[in-house]
Image 1 (spheres, rainbow, N blue to C red):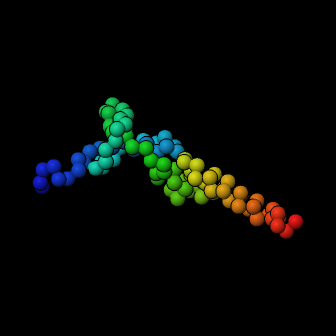
Image 2: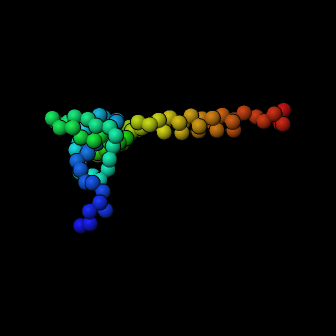
Image 3: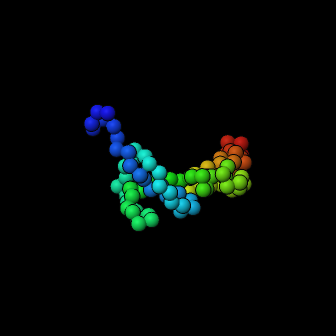
Length: 93
């Protein structure tokens, strides 16, 4: 293997922001944040969904997993669009 060509492979601490579950996995990522886990300090990467919070793995298919507010944002925009359609236009009056 050539030196300085490949990214540094290291253990990374992943934190599920929905359930706050933490797990260590090897990856070629880097992070400015660090966190201590089981007596060691690891670079930390926050993820919005993992097998601990995904409905397919949890069996809770009716629950929305949305840590970043995308579902609420969509519902608000959809409600505004429906409201505009229901109001009669000023030209018809």
